Length: 397
Ligand SMILES: Cc1ncc(COP(=O)(O)O)c(C=O)c1O
Image (cartoon, rainbow, N blue to C red):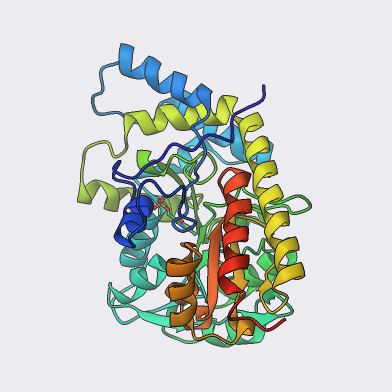
């Protein structure tokens, strides 16, 4: 089946966070402009998911629901067939979202005043999960060189060894840098964290969105020891654009950790947790929508290649990092020599480009932009034309 990745469903007044920001920035509805910020896709929902939701809404009572056995088996099958990881259905704990899960884990497995490691720049709610809960941010900055980010393992080891450091919030694949951590890199992380008794929460929400030539490794698949010292956060929400349905699958392989996690979930609310439509959509997606995903990835890769070629040709001062996974292209605009406030002004007011500003991912992101590529290709082409015109007066040839 050939799916439709061309139609834009305008979302100005649907409650969409991303589109509301566009309106707040003064974009008029009649301008044919879409946002390239918040990480959801401007693609139509896969028809198999729509059909499953319609069927459920028409024929099922929408009462409280636990995940069914078939649901849990389907999620495990997805992990096995796409990621080669043998997970057990009983390891899956439902949470509304991955962000809920990492806030929960921080509060459950660390005490106020204890240290939580982040590899920065990183997805900004991770800073909130540390700072807003009274924990101490143990910053392990990634090393940026030649348009690529790597881990400073000596620094990681030094910081993991700190007596106060209890938890690593790992982003894998990494948002915003687009890195897919190689198995060897993950093995070094695991060795360090096991040696220093640092628990690992691996946020793998972008796991399915790898670009050609890259392969995601589930952290828990590294070894039994690593599996027993981690929490794996997954969801269908990035892969199939279902974030509004608020259903994620949190794997806790260790029985001891799982017991604590489950008890804590029940303490906060003894009722079943998640959204019956979210389970339905996830099951339909994992059972029927792998071909949709393959086509979505092709469109994203086409969009990536367009931007990369354009920047190399027209704006070689802008360094575009290699996109190994996610649909979020991380670009270093500092070579243009413009202050970040001025970049934002030109982008918004002259080029009508609405990215996520790099500084929201941490201080190292200042002067960077994150471009959401999950949209019909013609919107990328039009955006590049606007950029060429808007920046002509500011950039020396
Ligand atoms: C790394 C990462 N984790 C978590 C989320 C959000 O997860 P959820 O919507 O399940 O809370 C995002 C969304 O962009 C993300 O990029």
